[in-house]
Length: 106
Image 1 (spheres, rainbow, N blue to C red):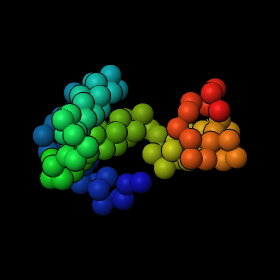
Image 2: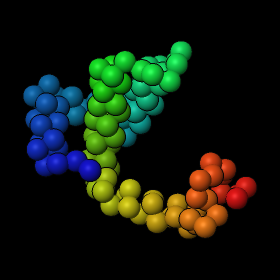
Image 3: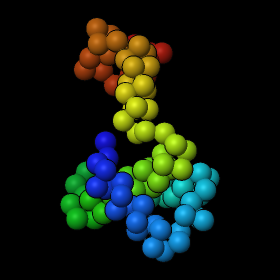
């Protein structure tokens, strides 16, 4: 999900500013939620958000997700694939295809 180029750029950016000291799992999780709220705000009054602002807020969400994954020592690719396997069991294609119902209502 993240290239080594992006990972290294992020590590260098944080290192240059000595911000790692502030990147506790709790602070990073809070930051993800805050930035996700700002992303949602782009669509507050309609389904069409300003593309530039949406990109910026999405980048912020992803940045904090990457920082949290690095802090926790997990690989984003691995945890996403693991979660997809769990979700696939809860939402089998034959019952979930084309439906938005929660798994316990399928």
